[in-house]
Amino acid sequence: MAVIRPFRALRPNPAQAKAVASVPYDVVNTEEARELAKGNPLSFLHVSRPEIDLPVGTDNYSDAVYRKAVENFDSLIAKAPLETEAEPSLYLYKLVMGDHEQVGIVACCSIDEYDDNTIRKHERTRPDKEDDRTRHMLMLRAQTGPVFLTYRRRAEIDDQVSAALSSEPLFDVTADDGIKHTIWRLVNTESLVNSFKNVPLLYIADGHHRAASASRARAELKQQSFAHTGKEDYNYFLTVMFPDSQLQILAYNRVVKNLNGLSIEEFLNAVKRQFTISADAPAGPAKRGHWSMYLAGKWYGLQMSPDATLPTGTVGRLDVSVLQDRLLEPILGIHDVRTDKRIDFVGGLRGTKELERLVDGGQAAVAFSLYPTTVEELLMVSDAGEIMPPKSTWFEPKLRDGLLIHKI
Image (tube, rainbow, N blue to C red; front, side, top):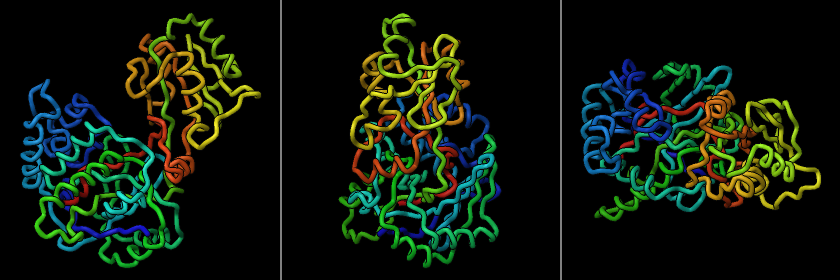
């Protein structure tokens, strides 16, 4: 059973929503965040990436950064202003990117269900990133960006969502990247809350570190509490839940800086022992089990040899796993993609032109274009209790931080 809870959102005045809304903190580095927020004192990046308002070179995890986050948050509440809803509500969040549309339900979900795996995961988290967001939440006493969840769609929920979209939205913002973000406030929430009681499982699509940090923050606040009841706001975390049928996963491609000491001919011969290679291939593979490789100004198509034996298990059969196990590790010597500085990743809308640019410009020796991981593959991995390989999924479009905040 999925427990969802209405909440009293802290949110910007609608007239300032576009100025406040910012990209998620973890899709930009400090320099990119500083550039995006330049000239906009209301940008939520001043709260989520407060190091941008400190001297260049400041340690991102220093005490000064978290103190600055509190200072900037208090300033934004006063200046935007940010307002707290009078009554607990649910919200609908519609994303439009080109021809793609998806509508999610904004609610608070149970940290107990995160801890007991009713809300399922598919990714390992890094302690340093958990430490950062846990401290950020505790200093602000707020969850400032939602965790992106999915669930296997149910008609009864779809019908309620569709009916609510005819009302006047709270926010209707088109960001500078052309993606449209529209949010509706729902005051009558009982029916949706009850419908989610029939949803057996929720799945984290994106935001594993935010969810893990919310769990850690809850544990600390629970320990500090003199009369913990389990109903406090810190027992829940901010989410947007989309039906699986609406999600869009884009390719998460790879570029490698050198050929591990091999000449181009030696490298191609090694690849031929693992894959069937075709010349003049398209830049993007057309289906699972195919890869495109850009090398020395040419696109090659890769396909598993007919006599190849695939590993058992859901994860081992993913295209990203096969590429890693059959090519990146044995031929190029990439043993751990998390730590090896010779490999980089190109996700989302940057596409295959970016792969060509990196190779043609000498920043990489070879690039690989993958067929996107499917939502069903993600759900299967999560249900099996397994972990997706790093950099397997790139969800697009992205949610915005700062539009709806959950105070804990």
